[in-house]
Length: 350
Image (tube, rainbow, N blue to C red):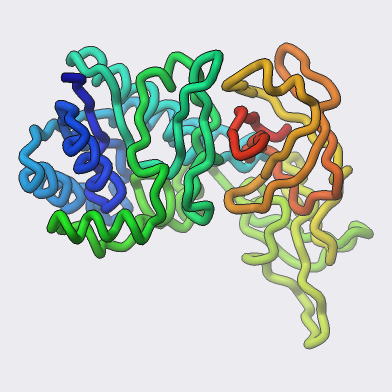
């Protein structure tokens, strides 16, 4: 009997994942991952752990606690803070999956004799001619392949996604039929594991900031902001303008100058070539597929897939050209590649 460690978070998706695997005949152990949490945010991890324990008790499977505070602080939080410091806007959920769930948790499970780990991600792992492919979930609204593009063949060989072939309402129905207490629990929102936080307030505790000038496209000072590092290209909130008029158009951040601590606003959302994009720190799940040149991608979660051409693949970067101009291309965010429903990997926008 194959042994599976399931990451149980106290939510419905991981609960049903454990239930499905048990029904399929696996030797299932539920594992709650404890991560670093700041002392200035109300912490509910103990409540989530209790729900996870109750689910495991209901399913009659063992429960374990996996302490990954150090790995989360260094691999996710410190990374996020350092990216903001250099003017990029990172995606912490991508790093949480890479460094915590599919690296540290996987290592923990294998060390304790597990054959696989499983998570409640909405994604599908399928055997293909040269290994494994990562495919979008049946529920396109919930698909999470955008956040797990860092997986590789060695990881996919050891990972299961038990609910990837289901719609969310089907998952809840299974939980209700099995009398799992999480069947009607709301989905978690916000920063991976920590939950909803005001990102500007969070960053101010780790990055020294000071007020600066808001400029228009002509370089005129039109307002004040809280610190250039706190803003994201394409953002249209959280700045104080000296003058406002009823017919004023929405203004978006199109540039950040960290040296002078200024941000520039414009009625348009972009101040760079919106078709050509370079990515670094890329990962290709199946190298041969990228050679097809004509692919699809998204540069933000739930964005519709956009057609593109691969122009150049180098050791550290990939240069691509979108068929249509893209809005709010943001340095530090993930660009994820697809073809016919398969996630081929991705990289970080330069």
